[in-house]
Length: 435
Image (cartoon, rainbow, N blue to C red; front, side):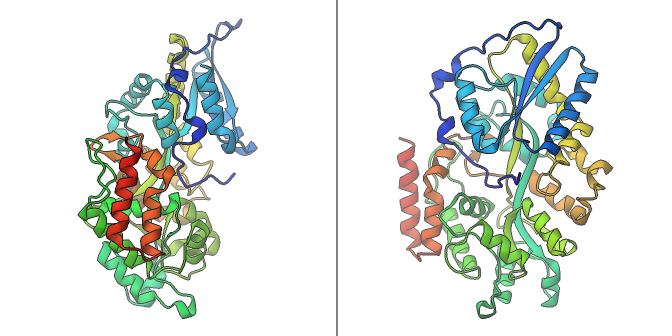
């Protein structure tokens, strides 16, 4: 299964009433074997990935013979509905794999024990995680986390260094230098573009634009949840993105357009996630690849943190068993096994794993191991719209679902609409959601 790299936000199927999540988990029948039985629901449905998950469970059970973990693989397309149904009925698995946004929703619906999650993270040690992985998984009050980070993918500006050398240009490090490279390569008559960017009315466009906005100090909300779309910082970012996009492919471009332009060497730079690594490797120029981040006032990466949630409302014995299992998934050897199911696309959230030979020397990863430090830097600098001052506002999911930001970008870039008017319209649209 090719995992989506658009980090889906609040899905209607998961937006259940708060009351639905308040019921206690139904007590399971006491097992005759005297062991604690828990379930682990995850999205690793291919047989080879299920085998890896089972091997992790087997190792855990050898160390914890009083606990039985039952894996529950669920297809990605059915996942949100399964969470909503089982969570609403008090039957959710003890441990659930979530994207950071699915996890936010489950916390809002009281499906997740944030106290148990916090205990596991603090038990591992905050300094063991990359800072960005923890920052974007904070709860809205900033007091806990929506899940325990286990892996990630990140997004930034991928650069073909060999193409730059042909024009005697250096790898860009800030807005001005990125624009300079884009201008130097732009030759649309010969199907050559300066950078491959998304411009469609889509979540992908919002994701990419958010990196430029945040790197300039702009965000959709401030720390008090006031809407801050129409600000000088956001305007500067939109003006810059509009100019930069003029050196990208024409029209409303999407995921495939960006990938194809970069992999086909029709652009020396592209905004994409780490899931492009396998495609670049297949195209034969992984050695020429590097990653930089949009940087005006600060570096800013976008990405998605995969977390493990621990269900609310379980018995004390089940909760303790779930905490033990999730803690085990953070041990280096188990975590590397998890990461190695999808080399390249999936990245570590634990600093120690980045140094392990089992991770760095995996044959499927050696082609781009030279970028480990740059990717780790991206995870460290991961920031999101709606994550401000140690708080992670759930309403950002509603903003993305309405397309307020992506419409603003698409209208400014593709439709050449007035930027001030678009900022004002987006500000009003988000304010309307907050009423």
